[in-house]
Image (tube, rainbow, N blue to C red):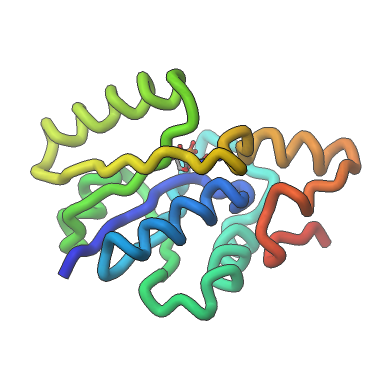
Length: 151
Ligand code: ADP
């Protein structure tokens, strides 16, 4: 059973995340989308809203589940029998950042990080840009799955 975790903030879920998860479904038996809780971070959407956006977007995909977690991603993996961490790569900045984290994680536990290259159509999308568009009343619906709507 190949089980992967896709960790992130998902504030909110974007078409970039959606694409990585959809493609990950073809590689793994199960994908746990794991919303990391960082007490020092301020979020635009509550944990419950962020969770709901993902649950709704993948309601027809039985291989995808959604959880939230605190602490180290590798600790979550060891406790929950997860062997792979799935991450997306958009650009060289992502690569440098992800490389350091992946190497650190490998020091901490025997867990492989698997990288999927962003799709051409979604490579420019980031949650921070989506939040900016929302704050300034722009049409954010072009950048996110239908399940993500601002009340
Ligand atoms: P974090 O708070 O860790 O940056 P995010 O929710 O922003 O979490 O991202 C989670 C994962 O999704 C990361 O691996 C990130 O590189 C990936 N990701 C985000 N946007 C895209 C995109 N447009 N294309 C591919 N991967 C993406």
